[in-house]
Image 1 (cartoon, rainbow, N blue to C red):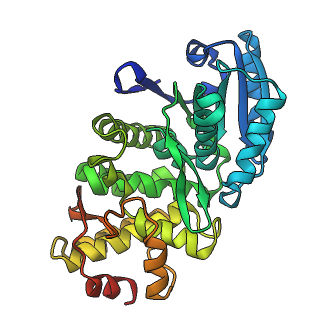
Image 2: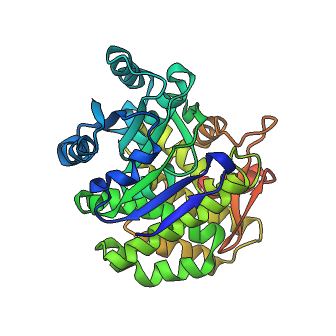
Image 3: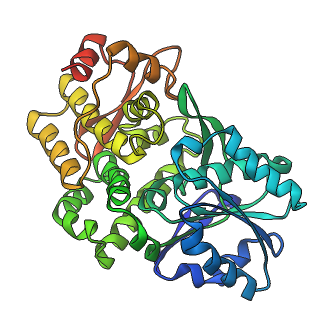
Length: 357
């Protein structure tokens, strides 16, 4: 069982990766402030894994309550978040009660935000059950909810006590969701590690069929890269923003198309192709590198073409991006495959050419 550490001093925490982790109470119990937890999950994951996790914890003497939320990006909002607070208050949860996020990125983000807010901060543990959440959203402490005008615009930086990425849970993941997770895996190769990108290209067929060795390596290397970046820049003051490659475009797609119509990873994939095209317009990438980016996105079963939106619509939704500074859009682009750069110097004409081909 590979274990990584997110190095944040006295707030450091482990990321455990491997099969059968839902049965490993010893990986969770040491991180509980008291033997009492509230598991937050959704209507899709609960029938699959809630009873198993509950039994594991109860065998270790932990009192377990739960709240089951509706499933989907469309429910990542204040109304659904209040269901978590309702359950915590009705159950008289205390400051040492630990929240456990059992599900994908939406559940992880909302559970973390609830933990940051309830009684001004209670512990939480991440148990991500989708590839996207295992390689990205469960690590690094970004939590939050969506607003109709912008994705993830309301939230907090709040780190978990531990992350358990049980690779067995990926077996119940629909193919579309698996591909969506691969978008974030590809991202790490594009921004940080060209050798990993080449490995992904060579092993994409194995990843899409959940070959155990291949998927374990992809998750491990992705988490390793993210942990390195977060340890250097926890609150996105600079370097951490490179983790948002494709996200400025992608979040605009999600918002404009209606949350849930495009999966997050699908929107990011199309966004990464747009970012590569913008990098070409600025003279950093060649045509072959843009084609290479497009090909690996397609090989993962992901869209490589963004939806058609009016240019003003793009600008409206991108204007709510968290990287906007002084009213100016900033983008994560590529100097070369394997090296990202953050820039606010993208001429409007170049941007229009990319978005309205």
